[in-house]
Image 1: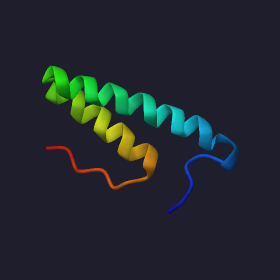
Image 2: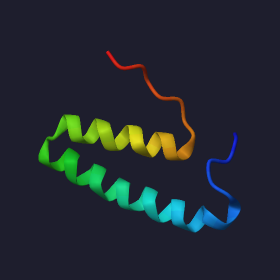
Image 3: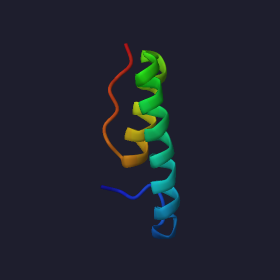
Length: 55
């Protein structure tokens, strides 16, 4: 898996993912499906996971 961030930025990336995960859980709890999907995709991109095609 190619690294999106240099090794020095790993803790920063982890902090961003943790923040997004918290936002994702709040969106799910509120029933905001669109918001949850957007945050889910952002986490996937940060982790280098494949992104589902839109549509």
